[in-house]
Amino acid sequence: MRCSGGMFTRRIPVAALAVALLAAVGSPAQAAWRAEEIPGTTGALPPVRTLAFDREGRALALFEGFVQQRRPQRFTGIVTRSPSGGWARPGDVAGVGWGSAQAHTYGRTRALLVTRKGTRLVWATGRSDGTFGTFRQIAAGAGAFSSAANPSGDALVAFTSPRGPVVRVSERHAGGSFTTPRKLAGAAVRLPTVAINPRGDRVAAWFTASGLRARVRRAGKPWGPVKKVSGDPDAGETVLRAVVSANGRFVLAWQSADVREDRPVRLNARVAVRARSGGWKTATLEHSSLASEALAADPAAIPIFDSGGRLLVAYTAKRGAGTAVELADVTESARVRSITSPSGGSANATLDDVAAGEAGHVAVTWAEHDASGSVRTFAALRPGPGAFEAPSDLTPSGQPGLTGSRVAFSPLTGDAVVVRSYVAAGTGALAAAVSSWAVR
Image (tube, rainbow, N blue to C red; front, side):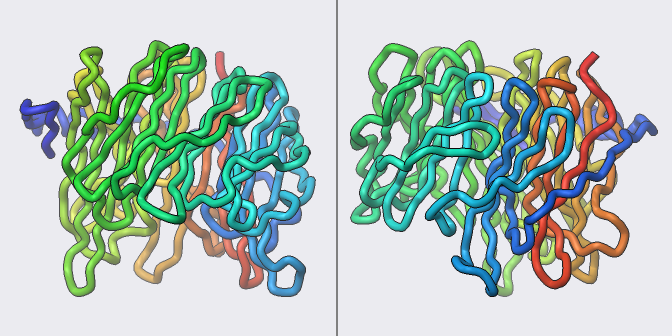
């Protein structure tokens, strides 16, 4: 395993890596999880699109579904969880089939929805109980898009143009409307991603044929110039994520699985951190080859900041003939301090999601498959800085699982809540699991 920042290259000592891996599974403790039913989700397709909590502890989740016997057959469904527990199904997002909808909670109980409605990119405000107002247009046509919002309701969305290789951005101040989209880049672009922190610092990034590019905007300042992040071209099914720390540290992470017929899968994961000088430093987290059947799903590298401000990046890594989920602790200069493996001794794990809570709490979910192709959802919790508890299997025995689970922490109880997909009566559905420990 190799990591680099600019021209700097180092190898993590084998002994140190072994200690970190053992620390991840050294504790015999295993958190208790309780299952929760989610009504009315027949036809749900993985992955879960959104899972977010408001400040009062209510959860809002979006999913896409398909039911042949209903009209419309394609729909975007809404489910909510009350602060005291218990799920409800308020209905569907009106007039939207499969629009890659993204919902963001802000304020105490407010919510912002961004989605495609037909060929249009639209938005609406509403509440975390799943009620939304009238859609308003951002753009008449949009391809891939990414949106983000901060706790005050400041938001931005970046999207590709359906008519050419252009990425555009539209922004919103809390309580206002989205601005007229402006051109952010004009090279052959795809896979845009955005992030924003509480004070309004924001980043937009995208792939071109010659590598990854990004622009940043400090709160109250104009957008900076396009900067080269990495010369690596987008290969395979690349998933790009971004995050901005409270003090304005910009981070990008991406992972690809380049699958070609009759060839080993090339698995790559990287992270980039923007230095104070304005340049980007990168680290390679994974660069390996493995058999195609070793992956349970499309892998992703997901960056988060824990409550102590440490940058953690979860990703899928090779282990033996299969894969495991790893979590890298990365410095401001894109140096990997340590690596742990929340998935323990598994060699069949592909990352689904990761989230941070209070007091150093971290939760990771992943999919595992067996030789028959059956999938199960697992979760591991870190109750504070240090080791993860033993992984928990969240899929009941005999129930066919699916990939694409999502996890988030309740600000009210500190519990980790997982929404996962499974197969019931030949079609998809959703269920939840809630951890037993809380913030102390």
